[in-house]
Structure formats: C-alpha cells, structure tokens
Length: 225
Image 1 (cartoon, rainbow, N blue to C red):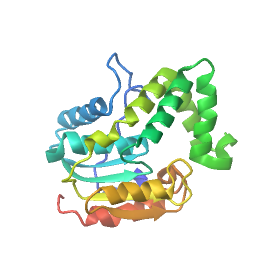
Image 2 (cartoon, one colour):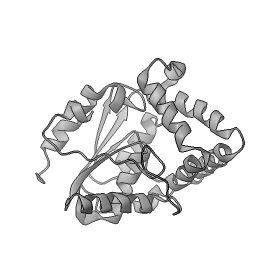
Image 3 (cartoon, helix red, strand yellow):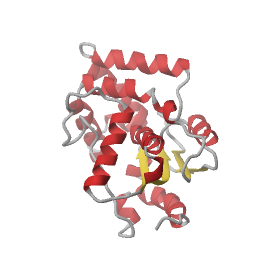
Image 4 (tube, rainbow, N blue to C red):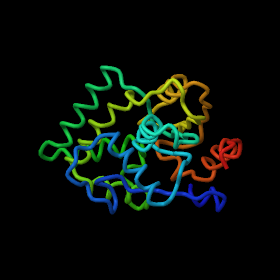
C-alpha cells in the first residue's frame, strides 16, 4: 500500500518489539510501551507530529499513540482493528493468549490465525503473503504473541473524547474483524469517517490500490501538510 500511495508522503513503518528485525527486549509488552517506541522513533527522525495508520494490532497501537501523545497526532487511520473490549472479548482473547503459550500452542494458534486472516487461502503457501505471514508468526513465538494478545485488551483505556480526525477502514470479507466490529469502532469515535474496501483482514496487502484509493481522499482533506 505504501507503493500505491506514491511519493507524496514520507512513510515510517516500524517493526514492533518481537516482530521482524526488532528484538523483544526485557520490558513487559503493553500498548503504552509500543506507543512510546513510536514516539521515540519520531524523535529520532525529527518528526514533530504525524498521521498514524495502523492495521489490526497496529490499529490498536495507533489508538494508543493518539491517546498517549495527542499533540503529536495529526490524524489517525484505523484499519481492520477494534476499540474497547467487553468482558466476553477479554475472556476470549486471554484464553487465546494462554493457548498460544502452551506446548504445541503456537502451531494451533497459527492455523486459527491464518484462517481468520486469509480464509480458505490460508494453506496456499505458494502465495508470498501467506508464506510471509506464517514465517513472521512462527518467528515471533508463543510468548511474544501471547503478550500481544494480552496487551490488545488494553486498547479501550486509550479512548479519548477529543480524538484527532479519524478514518476507520474495514475489509468487506474480514473474518478476523468483521463489519459489525469495524462499525462499532467508528461509532465510538467522535467524527470518524467509515469506509470499506474489497478484501479480508489484510486488504491493505492483497488489495493495496483500492485501499490506497480509499485512504487518499482522507489524507488530502487534512490541513496538517
């Protein structure tokens, strides 16, 4: 999607702790901690303020950044993600965290997660996106994934009554974050715009041009440039 947006914007795409080329470190994983990492990255890159865009877990981190550093967030784009967890959702996510940490739990969680992300295509490892997703999931490991599951349930604590301009985007065939969850998130944020694009949970990756076309008018309408 970064390529589809073109050269009009400077894009910073960090690997969160325990993901990609970033070590997990010794601190307990929380959304607040990762939000602080984003702010530290901005400091290192001499970025005073920015639009934040996050997909799935990244959308929760984006909300944490907006809640923790409101004066540094010009707008937020929340994709394939959710807001506050109710008690039932917390119990379900906590159970997933425990399961992924258990013996052989990583393998079971991988299959469940890939199916939520890709549906029937989840076993097609000839697809480079599926292959990369599985590789990153395995490399993160059960303890790190479990820690992020636990952290995700904190997202509601970053809710603010004075949010930045917000665009919420969902995939119209997202099995992981279905339409009702996306609509609920948009309804919970004052003034949020809501859009849907063709695709599943990772529509920004497997349908980047349409998603970029969905995002671009929102970006062009901001007065922060």
